[in-house]
Image (cartoon, rainbow, N blue to C red; front, top):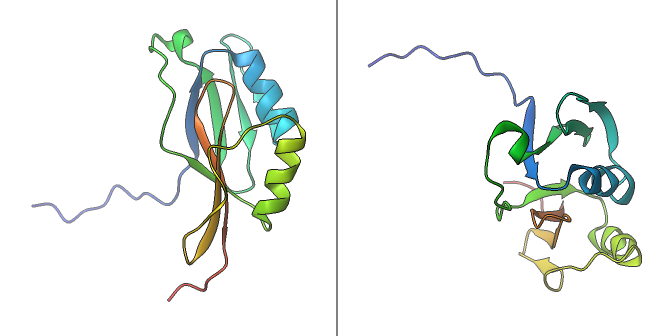
Length: 128
């Protein structure tokens, strides 16, 4: 068995497949306020900055993939989940349920226009 490592030192980006790229640009850029750092131009896709991870938002059909919304949430760190939630609700975004308190963090689940699951997250308990 090999004990060598491939030398992974981080994660460069995570891909979010969408059906409607223009609607995704509006949602991730305007509604969520993420910086739209790159638009690919040749294919319907681009990149949005979250502060510590780039989201590659890409039309699934452009690369021959069948679109299926992701049900595993991307957790956006916010300092105040209720304030972030109220901001999105004022923009017409619905949440899946009441804000959840897990005992260590607050979480509020919502979706992008194509049904990809997202959440606002704030951990309030210190890690052991």
